[in-house]
Image 1 (tube, rainbow, N blue to C red):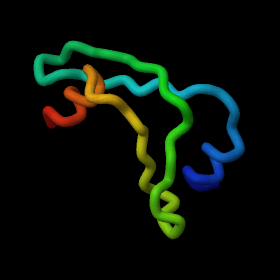
Image 2 (image 1 turned 90 degrees about the vertical axis):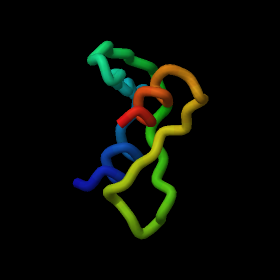
Image 3 (image 1 turned 120 degrees about the vertical axis):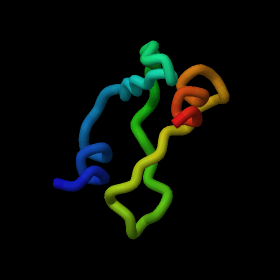
Image 4 (image 1 turned 180 degrees about the vertical axis):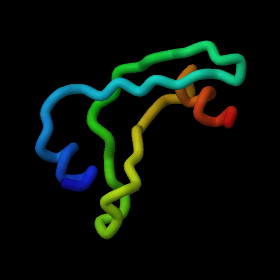
Length: 60
């Protein structure tokens, strides 16, 4: 089973945990991830506002 099949067939919510450059952890609840490329079953995306998780992801 690939990621696309898993997320399309599994119910629930997603939890994304990130950390800032100092190692402080943040966890946020998201809907299931989205696949932008219909031919790519390995790359997924979360739609997020410019808040703490977004800043943490951008800091790496």
